Structures are given as C-alpha cells and as structure tokens.
Image (cartoon, rainbow, N blue to C red; front, side):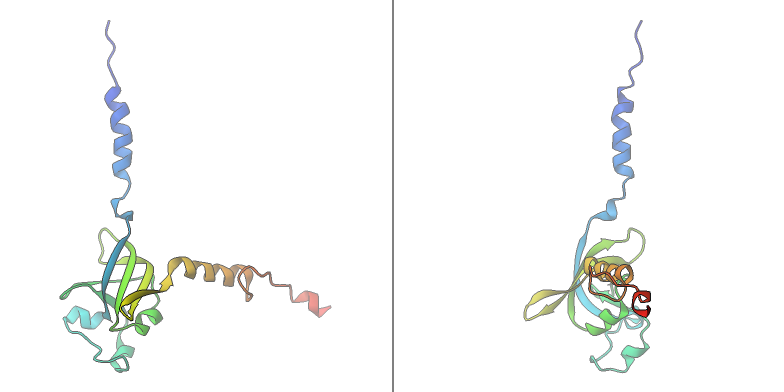
Length: 151
C-alpha cells in the first residue's frame, strides 16, 4: 500500500516563511536637497536663502529627490534638517513600504565635492544611552551618588 507523500509541505513551509519576511528591510541610499515640507508640497523651492525667516515657519523638512518628489525623514531631528537646508545631502536608511518616508541610518552632507557623514543613528543611540544610563557623565563613566557627599 502506498503512503501519501508530504514532500511538498516540507518544501513550501520554509519558502512561505521566507516570503513572509518584509522585503523593505534593505537599506537604500538617496541623494537630494533638504527643503521645507510646505514648500515641497506646493512645488516651490524655498527658503530662498539659509537665513530666510520662512525657515522658522516650516513645521518639518523633507528630502527633495526629484521634480516634485520628496521623502520624509521622521527619525531625524528638525535641528539637523534645518542646519543643512538647501544643501545636497545623501541619506542611507530603510524606506517604508507604504508611506513616503525613510528611517535614516546615516546622514551625509556634500562638502568640497565629497559626502561627509554628519549624523548616524548608531551614534545617536550611543549618546542617548550614555546620557540616560550613566546620567550626566562621560559615556561609560559611572555617576556617584549625591548622598555619599552629603554625609
């Protein structure tokens, strides 16, 4: 008597697990310029200069990647975006599969014809841990209790 072969289950189960893993985890590198979101949404390039008062009115800044196309960078601080407004920048990170945003891992600015790294998520995480794990101390330095000095 012949038994039924379940070889197809052994083959399809690992393949289905492989395809269930999101394909958007690959890092992308995108080059463009930083622009205000409201201006980018309107299709205009503004501010006209770095010291334009219009910068203070912008709620967020985006990376312009083409004529009218832009990408949000939600994990990047507004301060960093403002500092490099109108500059040519290159970001590396993971693009969201549904939304027009990218989780930035590395932020580079073009200076002197080459891109220079000015911010990384790894360094930001390190500084955050150093501040909140160690308190107000140098990274890795342990903070002594204030009660010890009060005695």
